[in-house]
Amino acid sequence: MKLLSVKDVAGLLRCCERTVYRLTKAEKIPGYLKVGRLNRWREDRILRWIELGCPEGEFDDGDERRSD
Image 1 (cartoon, rainbow, N blue to C red):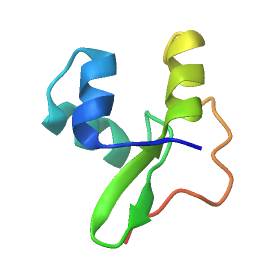
Image 2 (image 1 turned 90 degrees about the horizontal axis):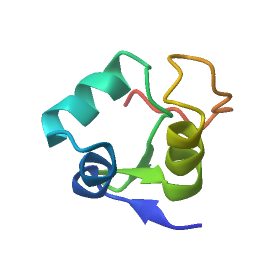
Image 3 (image 1 turned 30 degrees about the vertical axis):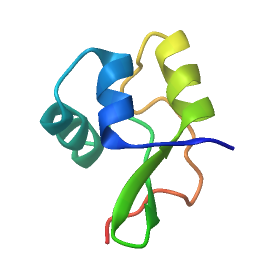
Image 4 (image 1 turned 45 degrees about the vertical axis):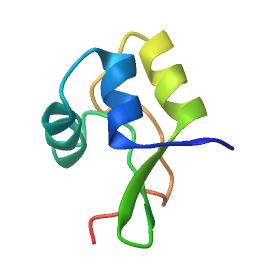
């Protein structure tokens, strides 16, 4: 399982890092994992989400979504 930084996710989505955080907070993107003080997104989930056309809230993130 590869973990992506906010910069990596922003690159895949062709948006700024702030937009990634906004999408995450609005639960419009698969949730992140906390690794210490860092936020990381699973590459497989982000790529699948993009492949599905970036559906809002139509993904099953299980209990990995963190709001710490």
